[in-house]
Amino acid sequence: MDLLLFRLYGPMASWGEIAVGESRHSANYPSKSAILGLVGAALGIERSDETQQADLQQGYQVAVEVFSTGQLLRDYHTAQVPDSAGKFVYRTRRDEVVLGKERLGTILSSREYRSDALAVVALRALPQAPFGLAQIEEKLKKPVFHLYLGRKSCPLAAPLNPQLLTDQADMLSAFKAYLHKPLLPRKQAEGESGQPVQQDVYWLNAGGERHYYWEGEPQDFSKNADLQRRQTRVRHDQPLSRKRWQFAPRQEHYFYQGGE
Image (cartoon, one colour):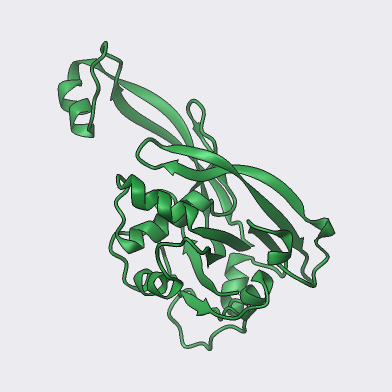
């Protein structure tokens, strides 16, 4: 099994859940839509390119290893938007504040973020994948578009450190083989395989416990772990149309591995 692994860390991240009304919640681990959105941005795929976006979301499976879920941060958010004016459609933000100036009002919302969360993502290419993992690895090092963690206000705070691991027995073996590097520049050796450096573990409060999420067959994750303790759940984060913000449900598995 060939897998491309890379880490996601930033002072703030927002992994969108189903949004209704004024509340915008965040999960405590990266969604597939956010992961593929980041990969698509690195490759230079426009959000409006429905064909390439569809090929991207159909061509890969994702798995996530969570080291730290971070701290929950809620933002009390206000925005000015015009009310509805018949059948008139505001197509840009400029249309809202210029053409709809006389109808502007204030809406209130609550937005959630995860602060100082660290996760490692594994990307698996399916037979119909439009891009090879080696090509994606290079683009993650030199992305075409700006990369962020769920929202444009959540930039990366450390390099993605992508690593292409080939001929792995399963996903868990790949996670354990991933070589961590310090999040901040310092004169310190790299972490052991599968473990962040000790200083990062300390200030992130990342103990030995791990949370794993993956799609595909249960045995794709591990051939030796007792997967009878896994959970299988449904998450609505499979992109259908980024232009219309439509997402479909998908099935994923969850496995908890306790630490010392």
